[in-house]
Image 1: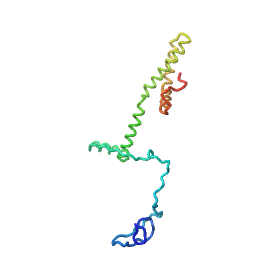
Image 2 (image 1 turned 30 degrees about the vertical axis):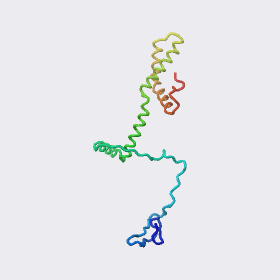
Image 3 (image 1 turned 135 degrees about the vertical axis):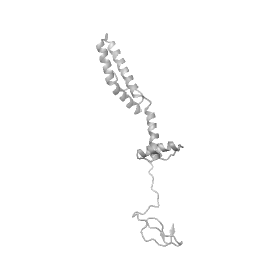
Image 4 (image 1 turned 30 degrees about the horizontal axis):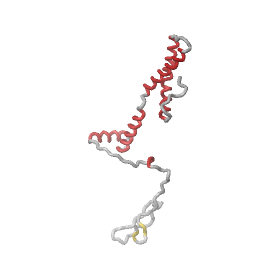
Length: 166
């Protein structure tokens, strides 16, 4: 808005001078860079996914809010940031809970044991010593095989077992 011949609050240095309206003054800012009258251009590559544009709300009892506020304070966060983090952690935990890693490791051990049993049985009779070796091998590789399987699953390549699994 113009008062007299000077723009008001546009980052123009100078002395404050009285405006034509009684009691109003044009204000000069201390910022050495003048503020732009043209809004910054937003690059076409920016999508709303990169920015928080959606809001949600909930109602809490006084006791619930006090608990949330205390938890946020303990972690040095604002209440809204703490709630956002809690929601996103719950979502990622729910996605990760699709497969129990311990159960998967045991299934991989059973799989390795069965495959080795069939391979060894096709060559002749099995001894107690060969069975113990197969069990020890299955136990030694089960976690590695389960981790490989989960990595492949999370990478989106499906639930196929890793190649080279004995």
